Length: 136
Image 1 (tube, rainbow, N blue to C red):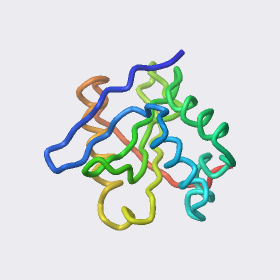
Image 2: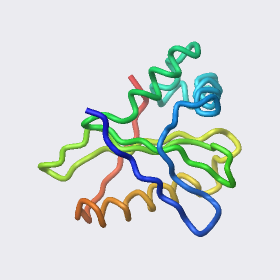
Image 3: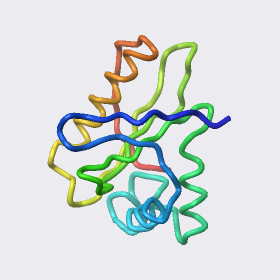
């Protein structure tokens, strides 16, 4: 089941928006798939061609997954999302990747913070935890 992902804007020139599956989104996923860090930690690293990129984007919104593009001034710099969503236990895993130009700038921290705020307002959960691990 496909989920509805809201557009989350901020006052600082960046936003979280749903994947559209347009040419820009596809090219971004193809670019991300060639980055050594993203290949190590994200399933986007398994993307090999446009067909794979389209399938990867389509997999971002399911019954147990929600995913957003991170844009700064209209430029895609990464993604952030929730996976393994368990609504009964109010539990989910955060995941993200950033293109090289956005790393070390606080973008991921701000995106996760914004997403956590949105979750608190919509789901009511105030607890969060995080861990890191390479993609399998």
